[in-house]
Amino acid sequence: MNNPFLTRLNSTEVLIADGATGTNYQQMGIEPGVRPEEWVLDAPQNVLALHRAFLDAGSDIVLTNSFGASRLRLRESKYADRVNEINRRAVELAREAASARKGTLVAGSMGSTGQLMVPFGTLKQAEAVENYAEQAAALTEAGADFLLLETFYSLEEALAAGEGIQRVSSLPLVVSFSYDQGQRTMMGVRPAQTIEAFAPLGVAAIGANCGKTLDAMEKIVEEIAAGKKGIPIWAKPNAGLPKGIPPKYDVTPSEMAESAVRLVKAGARIVGGCCGTTPAHVAAIAAAVRSL
Image (cartoon, rainbow, N blue to C red; front, side):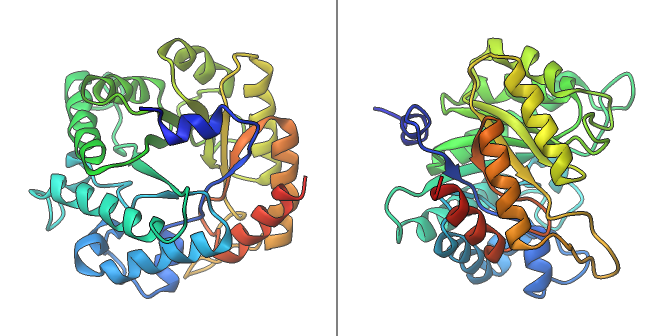
């Protein structure tokens, strides 16, 4: 059976991804200290509401609310023993929202562990592989269209995650790093290094999310495109940097839309937004990109 994500990637279409989860949940009233993934079980109506808001804004892709739903990320939460259930439910909610809009794609989101791998930290290769294999199996079995590794900083951790995923799933994989030092991750990884590391593994797309500025994201996309590997590029920049408490993001929907057009012209095939990106931002992005 043809995978719907790969079918659309193989066309000339530019896909619109959704926006932020955490910062929008803050606007929806999530309590400080509550993990976004807890809402999958505790407030599913809010999870559905945000998915639907992004779909109404024009998103082709919604990300499951499972970024931090791996065993290593949940081990100190009240749902530490319900990893499988949370990931499955996250897909179910995204699927329920997607059912109202034909052709919507569901991405199974998996975030970095937040830990450093040996020798810089204590996270061992085998532990990382198992962590992502468990989460990927649940997301795959629940019906995600593709899997997404996002907000990674370390090549070693991302490669371990990819190994775990490929042990249990044949779904297409997208890998997205966060270049929070401009054109380098906090571990010093450059975009060109990620494309060299992951191109041989047959990933469906590679790119970046979060990061510092819209200008930096454009340079990142240009550097990946310069690698000429022919792999579609994923780009979800922040709506600026957070300011104040609670954090506010000052990039406007029109500015995000203008940047999205530049990202597409630089080579991006999937565009959306990360922290601070609201449905209004996504609506502006979708309108601008679809007018090209």
